Length: 324
Image (cartoon, rainbow, N blue to C red; front, side):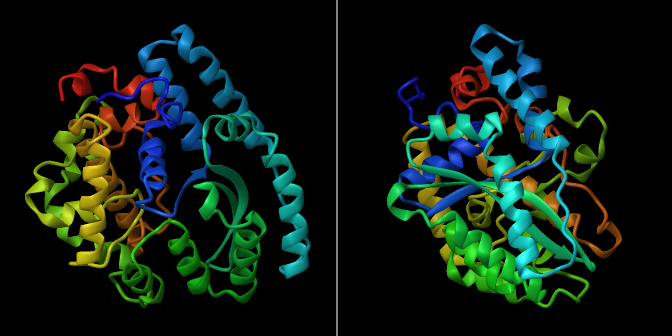
């Protein structure tokens, strides 16, 4: 059946809504969105592509105001100490709470939704960002717990423990969490690249490299991937399953079946295709010669990639999913 206005996640961006539906159905503990320019800009571009109908005008205003506000935020601290990072996080967090997007998501999501600052130490540099989390009310941690664990990992310059904790929050199999967080990153092939090896032959690099990739379909970019069982292991964006992991595959099959009971199967297949394609592009960006590469821009994986930034209730009205 198609989602209606009574669907509890229909107002969320499609890629996030399907993640969150798996959370509501207890297939995963939680889900999250990394807040960055692509997140906001993708929604603006997607809404503009279908025309700002009255039902989307307010939505576009929310994301545009949020993007402008977020781009003006600057965070600094004197030295890398726990106290300084906590203090900077408090200031940053107060600003993040004012984002219209955060207020919107809290209003439309039926569970627990919150945003926390996120720190990453890489190459001797400390970078900051933000992440919006979604949990069922009975499974939500305290936001301060996430922040404190993140800060401790940055100060100690050891991200393994936080990655394992964060993987648990997202409901990833423990074996895959262990594989990813303890993998030796000094080798030529990191855990991300090893994770996508089983699917790389099904992704067309020529299409993703084209400037007009947005005019292609995700079916052209990620073709034939359901011929292999490993396709189902990519049940979340930027999740890197241990190669050949049966637990990840079984979890993915269960999520696939759960989502297919609620939404058109073509939509669910595109969700898995996009998850696999996104993880593939992000994995390629970790290669030694690509370490400065940026995150994939909206539309890098074809029309559906951009379309998945629309609210779910709007995405399912497109002909591709009406007939699927």
